[in-house]
Structure formats: C-alpha cells, structure tokens
Length: 97
Image (cartoon, rainbow, N blue to C red; front, side, top):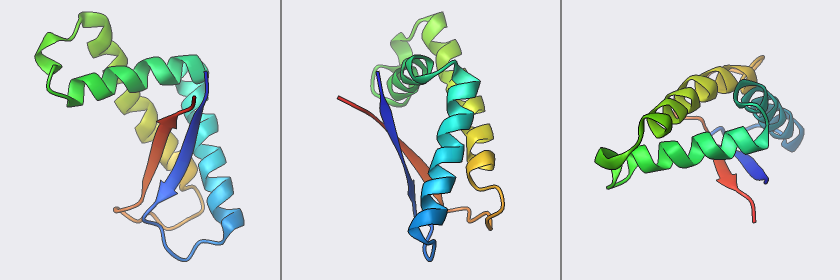
C-alpha cells in the first residue's frame, strides 16, 4: 500500500522546498493515521463521505473520515511549517498502484 503527496497552488517554491514540505506532510499523516495502510483506509472513507453514497456510510467509515480530517489538518500545518500559510495551498493525496 502506497500513496503520493503533491503540494498544489503554492507558487514560487524551489523543488527542494516543495519536496521537504511534501515529506513533512506525509510523515505527519503517517504518524497520525498509523502508516500508509491507515492513511489509505481513512482516505477511502473520506472519499465515500464526499461522494454520492455518503448517506450509506457505516459508523466505522464515519470515524475513519473524521480521523482523516483531523490528521490532514495537522499534517498541513507540519507540511507548511516555516513557509507562509497560503490559504489556497493544498496537499493532494493519491493512492498508488
């Protein structure tokens, strides 16, 4: 199980700064959700909550989606540590193959 992180909508960063920000985000997300497996479980639950079947989620999926929101908020702060906090900047998480 793997995933990638991409920092979007943060102009004028060097590739090194971007890489470090993405690494900090990923490390905080892994820590907050118990590794890549936990990240992917929570990500999938969040995708379901945001999708057309949101009314049909289980209690476990709801809790996983909630953990996703809390963990991504903390991970965003870690990822942007030392950088200006641009409100439009977003870390995009994508499951790997």
